[in-house]
Length: 454
Image (cartoon, rainbow, N blue to C red):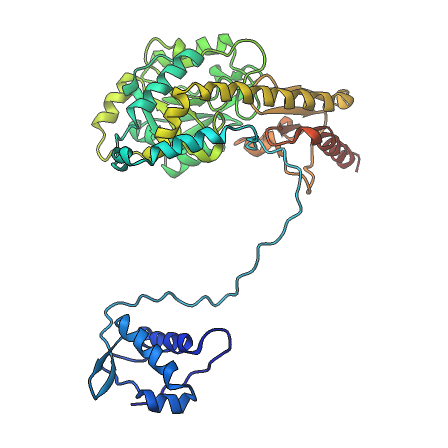
């Protein structure tokens, strides 16, 4: 038996340090099964610690099963089958670097100060009451029937979408649901708008699905440019991402005719259609489709808030049959309690009231943005401002992004870059404070003009 030697500090109680030292020696294998520990008297003398300190440390090791005792013989190391200790952190934790707050015109920024948190708290309390035990089960793989019913009713009245509850699938994100579509159409060749939503290209690359870019102009996707071998096209017709173009009536008809000619499908991504500021909301492509060719997709990220992580998919009937035949269908990825809260939010009518309130908030911000841009109108044109939470500023010269302002160009979202995209700045105004919009816009424009002059 070797005497145990440790170095103590004044940070914690001595018995706690001794307990940790011996425990670590056992877990690391320095002390093995049936090794005899020094007697309390000898260890007390060796470490110059009181007998009480040794007694307490040994007792804690005994209580936790690290050692065992033999009457009148001593203490021994117990058999430890598994190592439960985590490796020591060798790198000292560094506090996160404090960054100076920078104005952000990012397209994904949004405003939530007027959100009715009290109602979500109320519905959350309901969801976790004792009588809601059924919510603890897995639930339907397509999502709660009551939530799908509310989504169906909302889509019919607001977007003209025609479907049955059974055609709706709820998921945690556009990415997850689009991945499901690629599983339903495994042999398809895809086309995506260019510039377009980068997440769609990311999924196609990850799933190893062939895809081609297709150009976009002021009327939206150029249908004549679709490749003849394409089977599926992803579009954002109500407010093209990121140019803001609205798919014209003529192009909508052309696109639907394109899908009818062969076994083709259109994926309609309606990501921010709730926020339209001019004229009546445009009817969804799905509502114009009479041949079951449109896959409709949207999310609650804009209409509720981004971290809600709930999206939904409306499958045409032929693909719904494929979905039911699909082996290894994914389970529902949205907690049933969250689904319950959203359902109650929609049933109460507060969901649509919240959209109406939020639309007014963003319309006010847009008006302030356009007013702040007026002094610069000789050098710019503005497009894509009729809907959503961003618009595009078109300059007469290539842009260099300022280092101290978060902003994107159209070229950041293009697969095949064109020189004009270097002239087009995406101005997201969703996260701007009303009181600072004019100052932030003026600061941005002056920096862009100075960079051009230098």
